[in-house]
Structure formats: structure tokens, C-alpha cells
Length: 263
Image (cartoon, rainbow, N blue to C red; front, side, top):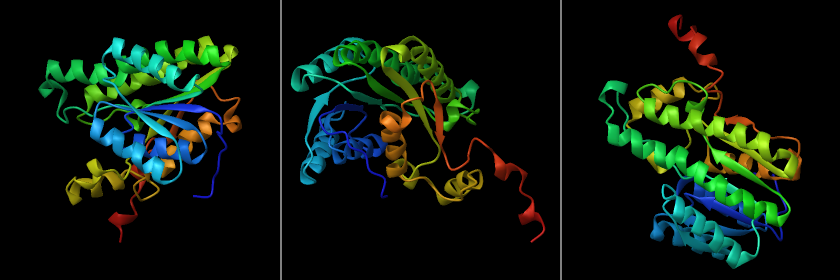
């Protein structure tokens, strides 16, 4: 990609940065000149991300965090500010899918864990990040939702509920803090080429792509570019948006295709 951003002198915090889209987002912030706080519960993955950033000449530091623990999240942001002196951007990305099963088969433990990691964590992050950004004169926050936050995910009732909640929380926070110089938005990825997707059986991937009008999986770099744009001055008038980066999953165009029935 040839899109470039200049975040020199800025500090970005990325949760779930030890792998997947979070890692790619952290790398992209670093490539744009930001100092990056790499936060993850996985110390090995988090340090690998830091090492990858260092190899490209960027600057990053690993911070251990369980985003489902409000005290650990508060401490994370305090540690980031202590290390860098400020906080300008946050990509609240950490999340899990949980059980892929019919609603009646999903366990109560699954409900609690997915809601804690996917939704409650965003609440904890916002409560810690916003005061730090106010001290820095403003900033931008991007929460990772999902295409399933805009439509009903089949056999993903708990995950879908959590991601709808992320979008609602994003909009509520944006209404409160937009006039104070903090823009809060959400990115809603569709199927992205991550190790999780790669491990799925081909028949599942084919079905997934049949509902994706663009006809291919997204690349993590494409989601990262969306996140950076939402943090950039180019999106200075964008607040409370649930921005689909999903190859068309939400528009559902392929559901009306009948050309294969007549070929």
C-alpha cells in the first residue's frame, strides 16, 4: 500500500497487539513514526511484535495486560503515560470469538468471558485512555467491532451481542468527548486473512467468501490502514462512526446473485 501517515512525536497504544490485526496495526503506527505501546496478555507474541517494529527502525515497548481486568487496564495506561509522557491514539483491538454454536448450546461461561473480553474491556480502556488523552490535548480512539456488530452473526450470538455493544459504546463515548478533542470511532472488519481464518476447512472459507461481494479475504494491512486513517487529521470530522472494512459483507449483495443457477 502507498498510503502514508505522519504520526511523528505521537504515542499509540494497541491492545491485542501480539498477533493478527493488532500486530499489523502496531507495525503500521510505528511505520508512521509513532512510538507504540504494544499491549497483550501473551508476552511472547507481544515481544515478537516489539522486535518486528525494532527491525524496521521503529520504537515500541511491550506492556502486559489482561483487558478483562479493569485494574490492569488502568495500570496499563498509567504505565504508558509514565513511559512516554502522553497518549495520542488508542486502538482497542483485543477480543475473542468464543463458542461457535447455536444460541441454546452456548454456555453461560462463554457469555461472561466473551462479554468481558470484547465489550467490558472497551469500557475499561475508554475510562483509562480518555483522561490521559485530555491531559495530552486530545486524541483519537478506534475500537475494533466487527461486521457482526452490524448484522446477525450465525451461530455467534454472544460474539454478535458483544460487537453490537462495542458500536453502541463507541457512539455514546463520541457524543460526550467529541467537543473535547477526542474522536472515538469503531472499525468493523469482515473476514480477514489471519491464522485463525487460514486454519478453517476450505469448505468453510468458500462459504464465507460467497457472502463477501469483493470475492476475497481482507488483508490485515487493509484494516490497519483504516485504523490509521480514523486516527489521522484526514478523519478530523468523523466521530462515532462504525466504519465497515468488510469487502461488502454488510451490504449483502451476493445474497441476491443467481448467475450460478443458470451457468
